[in-house]
Image 1 (cartoon, rainbow over the protein chains, first blue to last red):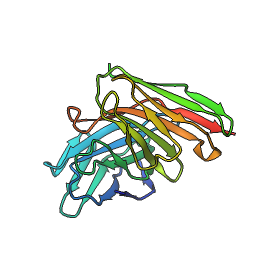
Image 2 (image 1 turned 90 degrees about the horizontal axis):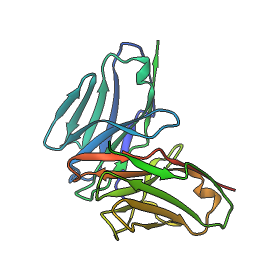
Image 3 (image 1 turned 180 degrees about the vertical axis):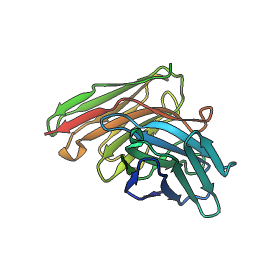
Image 4 (image 1 turned 45 degrees about the vertical axis):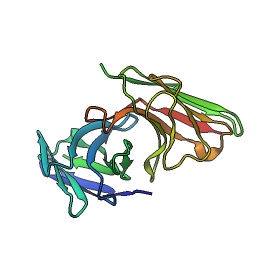
Length: 112
Length: 114
């Protein structure tokens, strides 16, 4: 079935630097791409999303880029803080199925 | 405030036993989902529903059944639980097409099958 590839699996950055997570998808009809943050022992929470009619979206320090031609999208966290340390998941909706396929996740560690 | 409530939060079951995980949402969302989360596998879709009376197979439905008796409730049923079904299960509601909302996740159910 449809798969979403997410890299890297582990990302270590220094506090104040930027962090980037990359995802790719297979179904060219995919049109919705959310990102979730999950703290240990908690549920995934939506942090930002983008639809296929956009190429870029920013919410404060979070930037999402979408390249539909390459079937890739990415999350960029600028000026990382220790509170950004968590697991991050990308997801894509194949076609108009109403369901999401998730990447395997990226563990982000922000070191003081 | 939008909410998805799962019960139980923790469950220990015996191999071969029947397990029912329940999910309730007060958001009036049509779509509901059951995912399991395992280290190294991320979040995998088991079953989902477009509304009361509807259930659809996700990517890993084998060994699971689902029931959506009402808009608010969506259950996941393990008729014959196996140790391989030990996992954290998340229910979610909403989703693409639901007013542009990404699914909202419940707090999760930690299931151990011994």
